[in-house]
Amino acid sequence: MRTIVIGDIHGGLKALNQLFERIQPEYTDRYIFLGDYVDGWSEAYQTVAFLIDFAEKYPCIFIRGNHDYLIHRYLTKKEQNPQWLASGGRETIASYAEISSTERKKHIDFYKSLRNYHIDDQNRLFVHAGFTNDKGPRYEYFEKLVFWDRTLWEVAKSLDPNIAKDDPKYPKRLTLFREIYIGHTPVTRIGRNLPTQFANIWNIDTGAAFKGPLSAIDIDTKEIWQSDPVWKLYPNEKGRI
Image (cartoon, rainbow, N blue to C red; front, side):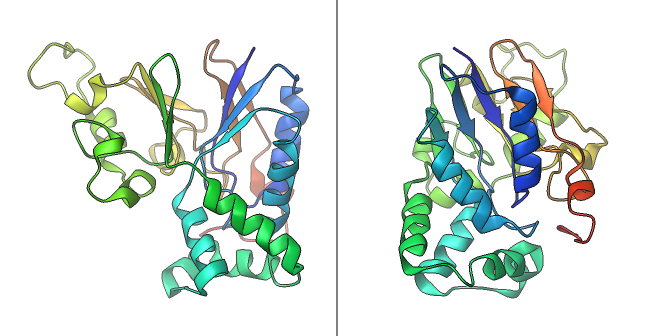
């Protein structure tokens, strides 16, 4: 059985289809999606519809991203703000404009069912962004931090690679899990275009919403698959800026 983790999609269904053509899914696979299914490219609704159907064929775990939280708030409460609209929200709202009430409810149920995090039987954590509490994500005072936090990634990225785990200065958060898989902060910000590891944290967000590809990784073998840079698949769109 392969356990394959997929990074932030941001409405790039063409990239997701291309990624699966390269993965060649097998029915023994398990898929963990790290969130941010929408906001960026024009196929937000279509991406989520695809994921709902995909989960009927393959075991899937869907993590909640901050953008998924925001579209859920829009669909259920009509909440919106200028920052979200400028960060892909307009494209997502447009993709949902003509759907039926039945489909709308199906998607609302999907967003409601998303997990804030998942811990597997090998003590590997899967979370969209991170956590701040030294006891782990289940102890977060502000639950939303798990899909907004960037400090966990910054701590791992700035950590001295020579520091020992038993050193009192070693960050407690990084000792809680065997591995941690995140998205949220594109590795393209540090000049990378592949899933990147610092300490025991793997960041799978390779900037699909911007100029990077969509990426997936087999968490046991560390085999990586990628789509083409997503912007090349949507030549008439800007994506997120």
